[in-house]
Length: 377
Image (cartoon, rainbow, N blue to C red; front, side, top):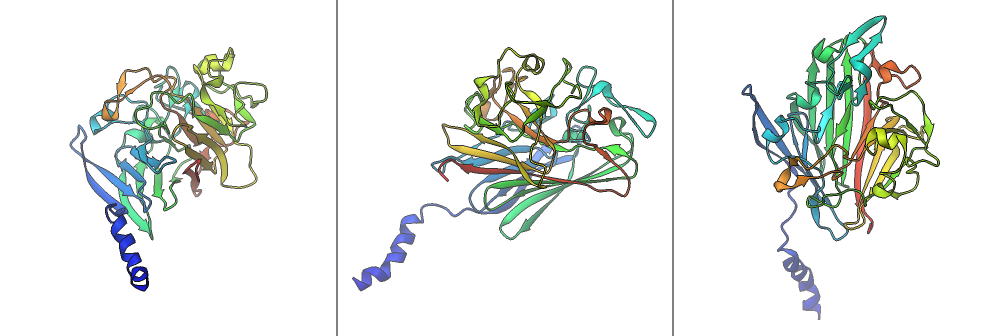
């Protein structure tokens, strides 16, 4: 018996040795070249738990993000392409850093300190997500780093004065950190030499059921928001902050995304579903829960925590089956959702909204966390 007890640890080790250890850390490889000949790099970041984030220095795009289901099986949960060429085409901002200004600015214009600035009109008559050559389409400087058993990438980019019509030279720094407890932490910083609007965010499309799923309508969404900002037919906020009570926009308790997405409601009609900014309710702490998504078949749970006052929930209403993505998957209508933490759309033209103006001597600084668990945890 004593001999058996002494051998037991070695027997247990031999029984589990067929499972290769997780090689946590960062690897890099070429992801192709841009039309001007510059090289693009993709980084594979692996956590000690086996979660993987692949991100490229072109646009800071997250091309792959895996998370375990309730049985411990990892699947890729973000939409995107297998190669750089897909991202160079006209894409719906899959996985990218968005700036200088996430979301829309009405008519591509704003007035600041008595001067009117004209931006690119790349969404009808409006300006969207930084313009024609926004931060999603630039080559960032990328520096991998580690902190103990957590790994990440620091992206930096200097946006010159006048780029896409914005005033001032903006120095932007965005950090992605993959933690040992299955969190992705985004830290945004920026400084400027001239007053300018800044509203940075991340634009990954999620489907927690995995890459073969063609719908997000059964995902159960909770938004910690008692109000939202209604829009007009051009998807520009009217300036009103409206209570969600009694409307299809009430996600204060977990509700399937598809339950009211086709409701007979003017706001639903304007957005072709959900494409709106919600006002995060809890302003008593800097980092607060803004959203929680549960996917019933896999058991995956995603929580979004942020220091931002708003979150844009977009239900993939403009995906139409014309995009073939990773692994040959066709991205059908409403096959991915976005939860973009942000200040409110069109804030430079809305005096009652929280200000997005950054001035010389100030530092723009904000964080957002995507935390992944399962309903078995």
